[in-house]
Image (cartoon, rainbow, N blue to C red):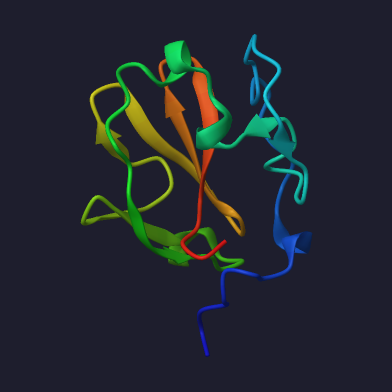
Length: 115
């Protein structure tokens, strides 16, 4: 009962940090929580924005109002907020909708499985 399902209320989220969504392309965005406002889905990135990205497969996503209890399993590795995924690739924030990933100066949402 300590972990909340991925559809937990977004009321416990804090506003997104400055710089989130600094894309130059006009991709569709998810606006269901303050953290994802202005952040495009990985599928909506242009070909040039996706170049250099590995194939990212999320097999598990756990969102909890306590940041220390949030994690995701991406490409078989358990990741917490701020953990590196690969070279120049970071799991910046775990939100109810998935994981906000940063690659160079680009931020995008890798949606949770089944979401």
